[in-house]
Amino acid sequence: MNIEKIVNDFRAVVPAVDFWSLRLVADNTQTIHMRQNQLLPPSLEQSQGAYITLVHGNGAAYAATCQLDPHGFRNALQQAMGWVEIAGQYPIMSAHDMPRPARSGSYETRVEIPWDATTLSDKITMLAEVNQALKIHDAIVDWQAYLSCRDTEVYIITSDGIEISQRFHYVFPGMDAVANKGSETQRRTGGGWGSARQGGLEQVAALEFPGAAHRVAEEALALLDAPECPSGNMSLLLMPNQMMLQIHESIGHPLELDRILGDERNYAGTSFVTTDMCGSYQYGSDLLNVTFDPTLGEEMASYGFDDEGTPAERTYIIRNGILERLLGSATSQVRAQLPGVANARASDWNRPPIDRMANLNLEPGNNTLQDLIGSIENGVLMDTNLSWSIDDSRNKFQFGCEIGKLIKDGKVTGIVKNPNYRGISATFWRNLSAVGDSSTFEVWGTPNCGKGEPNQMIHVGHASPACVFGNVDVFGGD
Image 1 (cartoon, helix red, strand yellow):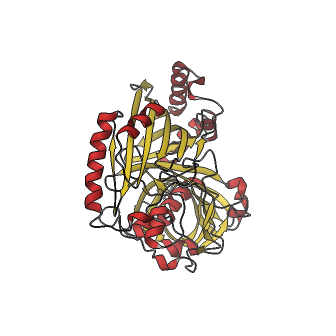
Image 2 (spheres, one colour):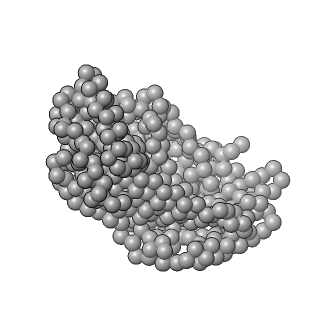
Image 3 (cartoon, helix red, strand yellow):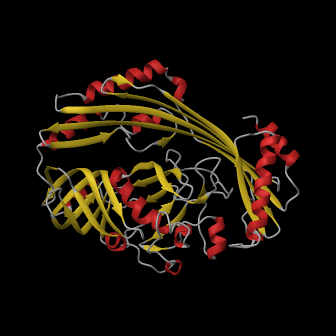
C-alpha cells in the first residue's frame, strides 16, 4: 500500500470531528496443499482496506471501505457520521472516554528464512515427500499435507498525530493420516496441523514438519488395534497440544470482559465469571499461573500494539491460582472500571476491534515429563485435540483427544484409542496437581478462533508445559 497517498487522501475529506482514527490493513495468504499424492490448485488470497473510527460530541461510530481513494473515503465517512448522530442518542459509555492511542511505534515479526527463500517447486517436492512418508500401509486410506504463509500489514493513524506500524509473518504447516480396518477408523495429525507460528520457514521444523510424517502414520495404524480408553475417575496428564485447547476454552473465553458484560450473549454465550471475582476468586490450584504474554516472538498473537493502539505488555491474569484481572481492552476497562490488557483485536479491515484472547500462556513449573508420569499411580496421558464441547457459560466441558497412553504405577504401559474427559472449569483447574518444567513447554495456538457479530476468525496463541490433573472423569468411545 502507498500509505502516504492513502492517508493524504483521507485527510483531504475527513470532516472536522473531535477525534478520528484510520486503521489500514493489507493481507496476503498463500497455500500449497497435496492430498493422496495429488497437488491441489495453489491458492493466493489478497485483501486490503480501511477501518475508520469517528468520535464527535456524544457519539462514536465506525465504517470500513476497500476503496482507498477520496470517493471511497467520502462514502464511508458519510455512513460513519450518520451512525455518530444515532450513537450519540443511545451511548453505552461517554464518547469522551473512548480510548485513544497515546504512543507511536512499530513492530515486525522476526523472520530468519523468508517464505520466498525456497521456490514453489521445492515446497511442492517437500509436500510430495511428506505424502509418501504418510502412505506406509494400505490401511492408510487418506493422507495429506499443506504449507501456507500469511503476511499482514497494519497501520494506525490518528488525528492526534499517532502513527503505529506493524507487520506480521505467519507459517502454517500440517499433515494428516487416516487409517481404517473394517468398521474402525482412526486419525492422527501432526507437523503443526491446526496451529501456526509467527516467523519464516525456520518455524516449520519447530512444528516437526516434515519430520513427524512417519510417526503420525505409525500412530494412526497402531490406534486401529489399540484397546478403548478405560472409564473412571483417575489422573490425567495433558500434553501441551491439548493444554492449548483446555486453556483456550476454559480460561480464555470465560475471562473475555466483553463477554462477561453481555456482548456475546446471543451468539457465543456468556461466562460463569463475574467482575467481582477479580482479586479473590480461586480459579485453580496454587500451581496455576497464567499470563497474557505478547513477548514470545514465535507465538501467533505476539504484537506491539492492539488494534485500538494500546501498547501490549506481559501481565499475570491468574497468579498462584487467584484470578487477578480479566481480558478486557481499553474500551471494556472504561465500561467495567477494571484493569485489563491490550487485547482489542480485529480479524480484518472490515471488522471492529473486540476483546479477544491473544497469547494466553500457562507458566512452567518444576517437573520433567518423567517426573509427571512417575507421579501417577493410575491415569491416562492424552495428546492432540479431536473434539470439544463446552456450555454457553464456558463452564461444563467435554473434550476428546486423538491418542491416549495408559499410565500405571508411574510407567506408560501402552496406547489407548478414543480417550475423552469431562469436567467443570473451576473444579478442573483446582485439581491441577503438577506442572511441567521448561523442557515440556511448547508453543501452540489456533488460527481459527471465532467470536463476534459479524463473525471474526482470529489467531490466538497458547503456550504451556505438560500438566497433571487429579480426580478427572475419563472415558472411552464405547
